[in-house]
Structures are given as structure tokens and as C-alpha cells.
Length: 121
Image (cartoon, rainbow, N blue to C red):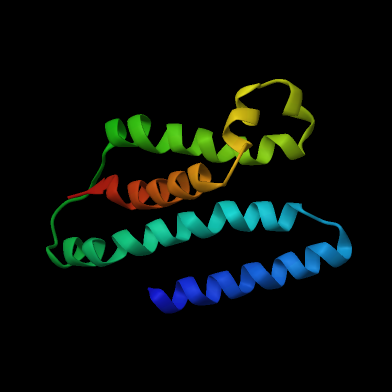
């Protein structure tokens, strides 16, 4: 897990250097959204493997998906909205985007973990 985070941060630094040369910020924004989701999935993956070995019937937990995953997806979508034409529609994007991107990172980790956690036996 630590190695994946290390490689991910190295890749982010490379993307930032490339973006500063090309004046393209969208790859950095998209990577900043996708990488925490991947980390969340990786955090839940060992428990998923244990559940798979138990050979029980699977179901999808819609309540957890609607209550946790969709709101976190909404928070993550707010990170993209300032770079689109819909930026003036929602004022909450300014609140979420001010300061550090901690909200988006936490929402991404929670979303990735919850997506695999919704798969229940």
C-alpha cells in the first residue's frame, strides 16, 4: 500500500511538471479525483478477498450506496465543476474548492471503500 501511494505521488509530481509546461490543469484535477478512489478500493480489497473465499451468495447494499456513495460522488464532482461551463450554476463549488483539497481526498477514499463495501454476502 505504501509503495502504491509513493508511486502515485511521484506520478502526480510528474503530471504537475507536465501541466506547468503545457498550461493544462485538467489532467491534475482528474488524477486528484481518481487516485483517492483507487486508494479507497485498495483499502477494502483484502476484506473483499476474505468474503469471496467464504462462497456465500452476494447482494448489493443499495441503502449504503445511496446514503454514502452518491453524496461522496457529489462532493467529488464539485472538484470538476469549476473547470466546466456549469461553474456558475452551483455556488457550493466555491466553498468546497477553497483551501486544501482535503475534502475531495477524503470523499474519494470513502467512495472507493464504499463501492466495494456495498457488495455484501
